Image 1 (cartoon, one colour):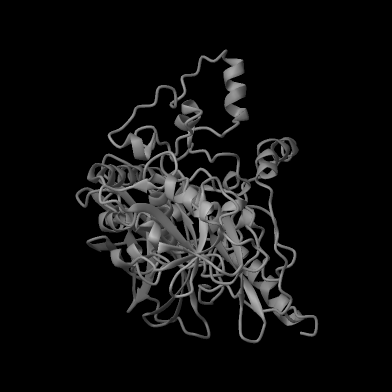
Image 2: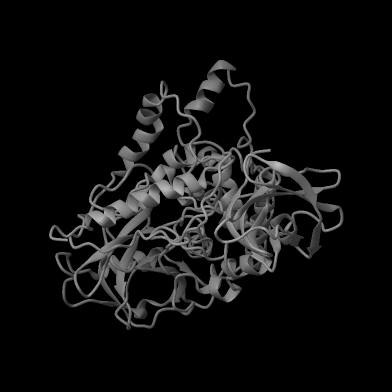
Length: 558
């Protein structure tokens, strides 16, 4: 490793993983899966010595490029839907420097969600030393260092009371539980005495002034007990390297081998952002962090940095624009063309949007106008544009794991002073969740968590587990066949306990480890009088009497 980069063998292994995941993750194809365990860890954290440089994506250029230039350049580009490249044999995303399977694969408690990426949900210890004024972003703020030496961005609400500080804390906890890397964000209550001016400059930055602090204190929301409301966002671990983009590769990161627009966790963020109405999903609100070890070598970890625009942000200068958030792009060329051709005859959902009981805080954030299939980011996003049904259903399966207690824990991190606002936000999140599950768990199979033990195959029905469908009238059917293409298809009886669906695998005593038998099982879920979903197609090898190995799961379109 004389040049500070991974060895030739390391690079070869990474590309082998690319092609392996691509082949194993291709859904609805008539092929055998290899006799190998599914990949659950993408080894993209191989350290290297040459620290990448910091990059900057100008926000205005990003808007113009994706709104206009990229759209024009793709007019004559005929591109079929392309499966995400980093999907494993079970139609899931392995752990990596981008994503960690949390609530989607394991158990996450409400207490863990309440803490999120923080060591503790408690406020950082005082005093808070102001080391400089906040230099970027749309809201006033400071950079502080708490009594433990942790550096953080200190922000306050502007415009709508409590929304910005609450949404920053709530949304990042939901992103964290879903599996993304996020900073630790907390709502705090403070007095001016908690903020102490630094006496020595922080690097090349100018010393803060009393005027910098006064500007923030005067603009902060004052509570009935005289305290002021703000939020503290801890600096991410590692050295910041600039925001990661929703397309392309980072040339100076040898671990970055999947184009970002073809990563499932980046594509699937569409559905999570739609749930929260996080309209500002763009490079500037992400961050790459250089995670350096004691030996000076490191790797890049990819963070979702800022989701403080979530829920119902209001621009005082344009209520019509505020009403359209999530329903139309800032400059929506498609809608403009439709309006031009119909002389404005189309009645948009954001005209005369209703105001709910928590309008002062949550703005026009609601469930009644929400269409999960047609939610729109602030401006077009290259990864969202390429998201397939499989990518969106993957995120819907993760969202299905959030129950009422999880949502309460996340919302409680917002520390709302008004119980009406708290209850209304929980109601809207739950209702939008139902809309997402109704859209994405009723077409592709909602069956997941496949396990094989003692000759039995078991899966969990997220349609039942999430409460989307009642137990009464829920039916499951299974058919099995040998080899591929199919030979000797036969029905298999299913058994259900709660949301767990099991079936006894047909046994062939002639199967051995040296001459294994290939078996495919299709399991379908349906509700009487409603839908029958696509199949969960499970691929297995029988390697001995009653001994089976799970090697693949596909969810082909019905």
